[in-house]
Amino acid sequence: MNSTDLVIECNAPEQAKDSKEDSQGVGLPKFNLQLFEYKHNDPHVYGVAMSAKNKVTISPMGSHAKSILKRALIGVDDSRWLGGRVHGLLDANDLVRAYQGEDDVYRQRTKDPELDTAVTLLIDMSGSMKGERIEWATKTALMLGDALDSLGVPLEILGHTTMALHNYALYPKGDVDQVFEFANTNRHPELAQFKFQNADQTGKRLKGGRSGKVVERLAIKAYERYVLGHSLSAEEVHALGCALTSAPRYISSDPLVMFNLLGFGVRIRNARDVIERLPYLVGVYGDNNIDPRAIEFAVNRIKVCKQKRKIILMLCDGIPYARGMLSKSLNQCTVAATIEAQKQDVTIIAIGFGESKVAEFFHNHVALGSIGQMEDVVLSVVRKVLRASQTGSKCTMVGGAGMRV
Image (cartoon, rainbow, N blue to C red; front, side, top):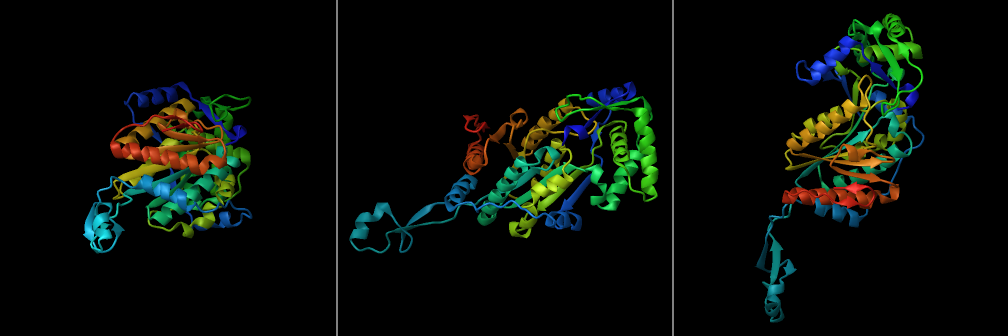
């Protein structure tokens, strides 16, 4: 997200009181009332993706890398080797009998080890991922997607951001109607007393900003014009966005958007065209990223899988942001979401791109300094985490490209 597009809300005293009560458990803090899920083949998503001339491609993962990943994903090997067979592998314990011409000197495995694992790739599609970062994330998704697909490991690929209100015409009208109506009907009664301040993604305040009186007047006008079918100006859309974040007792009502790029049980070739155009989709749809809600969404989906081991690989830059929510509070929510996932036996591994801050929120993480490190480092991270999960231990090695597992 560009810094000039970001706003943070300086709440009036009454709003601040509500937030304090919520944090103490007196009230019920809420955020992201609106949750919209779009699939890769939805017309408005597929149409935008296919309009892109360029797409990100990558050579399939080599057989050696796939072998490494397969061994990492194999759970505790409960198979056994039985000797005395006439076919199979030569049994080292029967070399003398084999020399004597006996035919029952081979051994066979009674059961192949199973890849008892389900994986979700959760991709940050916010504006701050534009450029090289989302290209790296796309290549990582294609690499792991091809490998896991060939190994028969259940895989889901999800992207997350928030509704880019300035591009509201790109979304289904029913969804936009819901968001704008919520912004209009849930404006804080003391909105005119607020001060809206420009800020960057870290929460640092910048020059500029608007008073609540101006925002309220523009928001009312904007909604009236929208209902009449008129196009909205950038200022009117901005005002509706500010009104949206002012909803009382909501720590953030930034509309969460999830892109279901690949569902469990679906072959990656059926969604590859859209995944290869993720950089373009981020350029169009990319807005904010509410990581804790995206984690919660992904955990609720993967936890119903029958596989014993459940892993969420987050591809991100480690910079959560939501309209109307201070970065410190959102960071705390992100850490809490990872802890809750662990309680539900879901392992989260964050793979950060660029100047990533994944180390601040995720125990299992790796920051990639270059695309050339991707295959080796990602495989190493997955292998070490899975090895630790098999033994019930915790691995806390630090090294490599900012890697800590």
